[in-house]
Length: 270
Image 1 (tube, rainbow, N blue to C red):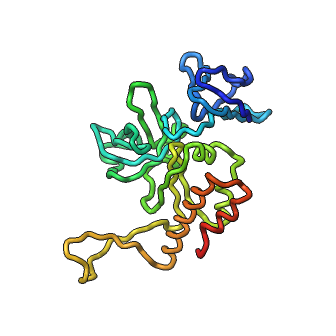
Image 2: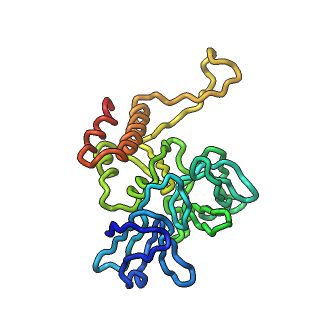
Image 3: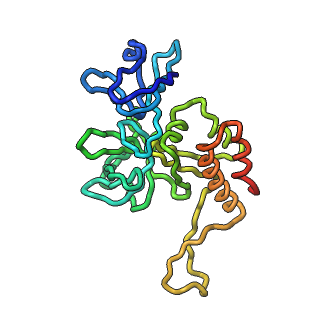
């Protein structure tokens, strides 16, 4: 792994044979289509990893930018904000330009078989196109298998929260990070991490809601309310989900020797 400071356009201080092996590029790295040359497109710290006997490697620029810029193959969490033509408009970050998710960008999608998404629903997707001056496009298909591959509509019983972009990259790209491993010692969870600084997490049944069946005559007429299922099991899952989100949020600001203390604080009383 390198800790070299890089500026946009700099020559990458890497071995020449890095271009002869399979390379996974992350944020801040651009590959020229014709020459396949890798050049930095952002300022920050260069990170690249390659085992001596491996024909694969990872390279990306670590920076503490607050603005997310989509790049092809980024994994992102987006919120549906509307539809235009045959695509959904998706927000990847507050006050950012919406990107497009085609109605057909799902496995086996057809006119009779495609998700009918509503505003406010969340999706886990891959950036499939980020050509300058053309609207960025997403898809919920694993390009290697043509199947779902973990992408798609996210369960509404999960909880979504924001983290710094560099922390999201840390969780996605650094195999030595122990944040999720530490959390797993306290609870079982499902998680989706977007490189755009959004995390979806769910413990057990998550923050499951049940619609009011209207059997309570004391409720105001005409109101369509939702009531949280407060059964003992679901209440524990709800608290655990929120505690897990609190813990991961705090992980951005503490050293590793404080993780167990933060974990205990987040799950206190659960």
